[in-house]
Image 1 (cartoon, rainbow, N blue to C red):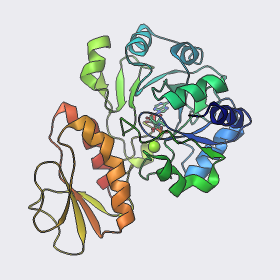
Image 2: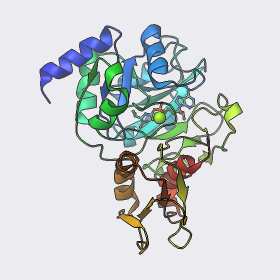
Image 3: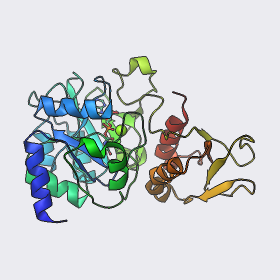
Image 4: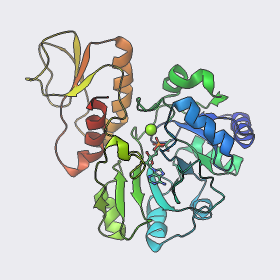
Length: 311
Ligand code: TXA
Ligand code: MG
């Protein structure tokens, strides 16, 4: 990418503007994590409730650590093994991260992304950047710059185009702020990989929406296309309306069927792009073949279950 574009984006961030940028997971809607009014605008543009904390992105582990009040050995170990990469660590925050970023929580989610454009931007800006996924609240996350332009384009100062995201679903989120490590959001870095480094991690319970603050980001409905989506096998597809069937094993002879990879990392990389595309095509419903029930598919199952939840 043209270094002048990175310099321009970094200057916009330092000046309190919003910049959308690619990461290896999904595109982020970035603002300076040190500027409360810039952060305020992220919530306004996304229509996101103020009770939902944002992830803060840093250029390297040293910058991330400088934002934390405590940096337990488990944080150091996970950062050394998985950063830069699709892992967010929740730790106690220092006061320079404004409370607006963390929805008033005393903790902050920190991540060093692996995408070269994100890293170049973070290095050039020299500040921590708060960035949720660059989509309207509860909507589908963007995995291309076109997805961002289509939904939020007019409301951000600049959209950096770094091509399609390689991981395709949001980072794994682990809290290290309590007495024991907690999985707050599954992702493509698996629990097994994390446990190999720091030992047992407890799964967080699914919180009801009214309890969103206690377990932010655990809303049952999230990541949803506009078209009604259900999880169903090819023998359980609706008879009414025109629908599309997303399958990984066998197509349905009676419906428009779209093949997905049968391997979880490749499936994840394709998932949001496929759903964005089907949304654009205007079907009455989307049916998605339930993925296998095993650890490798946990994160994909989590996103599909939330995408299928009723509003
Ligand atoms: O892959 C990703 O993580 C993407 C890219 C842009 O980095 N970002 C992303 O951000 O997915 P967002 O805002 O859509 O998701 C933030 C989630 C929250 O919903 C919550 O689950 C968790 O991160 N989180 C952030 N800060 C937290 C905190 N202080 N305590 C608990 N959970 C937190
Ligand atoms: Mg999001």
